[in-house]
Image (cartoon, rainbow, N blue to C red; front, side, top):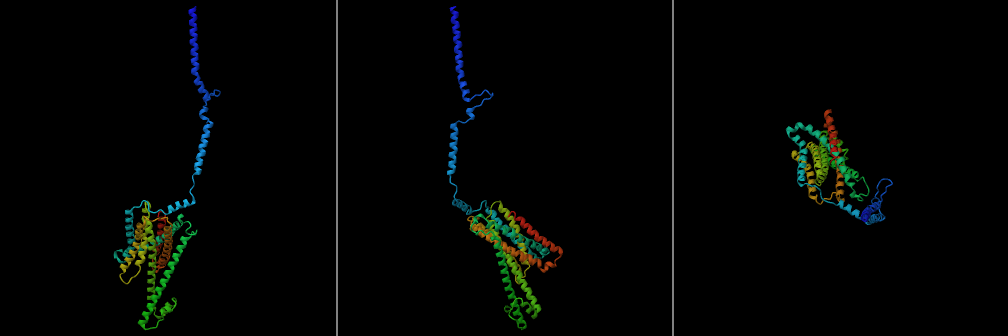
Length: 417
């Protein structure tokens, strides 16, 4: 009995010790459940220790945001003086990006050849027999070139002048007057008209004076000095003196007037061609190839219009060489501008105020000169000429269509160049 009693006490002690170990092992899990905030009433476990920020962490984040905002507010914004310096740096930047020397030099010769060929074709058609059958083609090309020149003055030269003189780098330089391009073009147009009128009057007086002297020496008649007579009265006096001789004088005066208008046209074309050459030489990248194609097209047909006018003139000595000289002068103007642009391209600042003023003023003046040359020396003279009215109706329609086509073609090219 005593033995059974001791065995029962040992079993009870062992069971009590196991229950105590189990209770101790469950204490961490209960503590973990307590710290995680286990909620059994909804059947879901929500970890408040993860989702709900503690007051300490919220305070730290708030202080961090406040410090970041203080740093951002403490950074000073650029002053107007610094902004002006940055703007001046952009305006005074020099050099041309993606500039290809070999391509530029090749462009000089391309423009030179096309300009010379365009100007010499009508001349060759006059003096070379096998090209004589193509004179109608050259006449149509002349009217096409007139349209090209007219569109160049409006779309290219005037558009470039407005864009250049309206650049932000010229703020404060032009006195807030936005119509400088149109004003300069009008001044150039009026100056060309005054110059042509003055030179034409001198030529007329010189021709009449020479005619009067030759008449007096040949017939012994007394003729008043031409300078003492009003110009409007001189023809009637000459007609009353000798009608056939007066007719010769009128023809001589008309030839001098045509020659003068042709040289005025060549002067206007030469001035704008130099500007175009400089612009082409300081252009880089893919824009250069587009501009080169547009200028090549323009120079060829512009040269054909000028060459047709030159070929229509009469010269007493070496007419072919004189015509070739005029064609050569035209052909060299754009390459001359390209050479100038190539020489100054490293130091050339395209947005510097001095550069913008020079290019904008020259573009506006060229627009006025070309506008006067196209309207007064090509459209008015050519469409009012006796030869044009003697042509067939079909030929007149073709000439009008050629002029409109030249305007349209050059206007379309203005989208890219």
